[in-house]
Length: 85
Image 1 (spheres, rainbow, N blue to C red):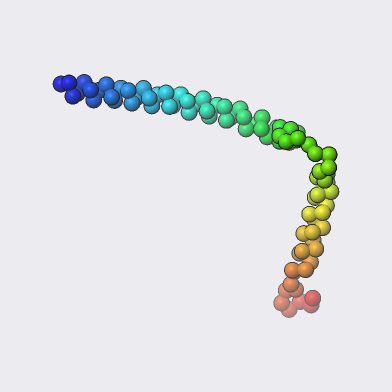
Image 2: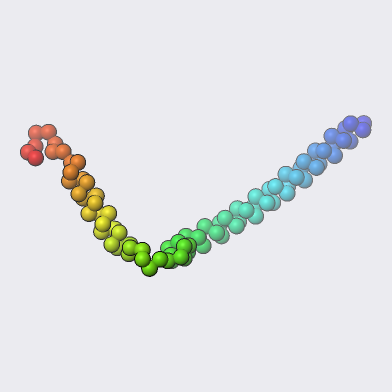
């Protein structure tokens, strides 16, 4: 009988532990649900890192990347078979 009582006590302890874990999980999920939109909003406003005035403007970077991609594509593009180059 003492063994059964000990087993019941341990099972109750484990159930209580599982309940606490479920509560913490629910709290963490709620925090993540609130954090994600906030983090995205800050990212789009440029508030995640300090701004460096020496940084290249995004428009210039995009132009440079497009030009680089065009140049690379022009060099590597092969004519289709049966068509003049």
